[in-house]
Amino acid sequence: MSNLEILNLGFNQLSGQVPSSIFNISSLKRIHFRDNSLSGGLPDDLCVHLPKLKELYLSRNELSSSIPSSINKCCNLQILELSINQFNGIIPKSIRNLTQVKQLYLGLNNLEGQIPEEIGNLFSLEMLNIQAIKGLTGQIPEEIGNLLGLELLTIKAIKGLMIPTSIFNISSLKTIDLSNNSLSGSLPNDMCQHLPKLEGLYLSRNELSGNIPSSISKCNNLKILAFSYNQLTGIIPRSIGNLTRLKELYLGLNNLEGQILEEISNLFSLEMLGIQAIKGLTGQIPTSIFNIYSLKTIALSSNSLLGNLPNDMC
Image (cartoon, rainbow, N blue to C red):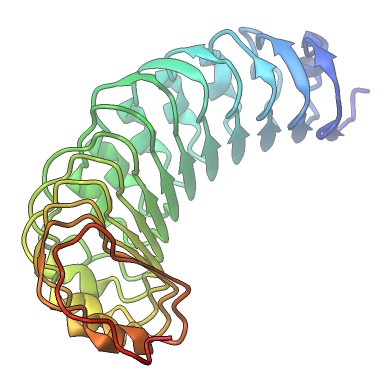
């Protein structure tokens, strides 16, 4: 089928290896094998004969071996899905030549080594997902800050990383998910100065220290703010009360101190409030919190708070 442009066999029960002859059909623009039980490896010359390929969907299979360095020959590739497989080896540095790629999914594989700084060359990238890859070490490269069109960044469940400050300069970002990474260090004071579109900030289950910056209020489109399970200190900044679009706020299991602020009652869209297990919190629970009609869950257990609950709290 020398004129074939779209091959879609996704969401079936196919097993065995992908015939290497498929990767010789030079007219192909889309290959979709997602959600099958395909096994074996990809050919070393994967992209040598696929100059027109724009979309390659291989996620949710049982593919193994390394990611071929010849992936760079698919120079028109816009979507590359390899997540939830058994790929091993390193993320090839040749990936730097995929300058047209918009979506890159590599998570839940057996990859190792470092996240290559060459990822910073993918200037068209809008979505980057590298999660739950236990073999990755080193740091998140500063070069990620070059991805000025990035909207979704997911790098989580990878141990021993630090947050590069360059991430907080990508003004196009809508979601930053760096949870469950053992990230250390403190949050930059100006972390929200350049993130006007940010809607979701997930930094839970790390080892972050220092204060919550008061500049958090500059992320005024935030809907989810997750800082729980860290080592953050200082007070809850009053500026959090300016995040009026916030639906979920998670601050529990930190080393914060001071009082629960009245300003939290300004979050009239809030549905979930998690401020549990913070021994340094003192004072009374502001009764105004119970006037937030949208609230569905309030977690305040294991604190040192005083006072009585209002009679009309419900």
